[in-house]
Length: 188
Image (tube, rainbow, N blue to C red; front, top):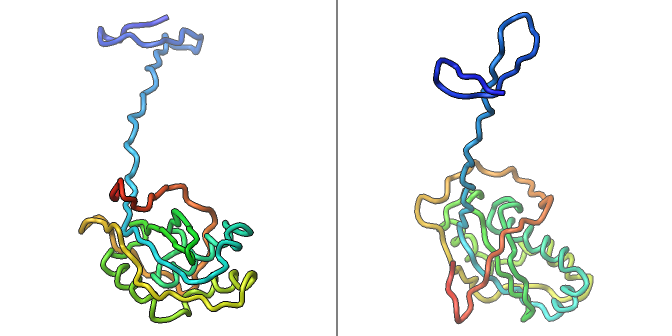
């Protein structure tokens, strides 16, 4: 049944007995869907970690290697592991394609500068080196400058407070897919 309220609208009515007149109940409001929050990629880059046994390690423990590389990149870039997405690992030594989310709160120019320090030392590769030692006794190193393919536009990355000094492993892998550049397609 419906009732009319002062000639304004027709709404469902409850004609139950409640010691008062008929109680009219307006229809529930339909929520307005909110657009999804866009994901900002601060930088997308690749880095080559030299080692001859990465093929074996990838076959044995791809997930572990992905987490170790993400942890080491987080150390190098001084950001949280959870703001790094490894999009692809390829053998040829180990070619790592990755992105850093804008939620890291670090400007792309700062991330690029920190990434350029990858060749200066191997200390930041501790997690990857530890896992790699299960298949080889080689010492890993980065001799070629990392390549940055994409940077966010100025103002797209909001600065965040500094992280605590202890880094932690990510609790889950993120599902954003970044594609490495190919001869047929350019970023993004």
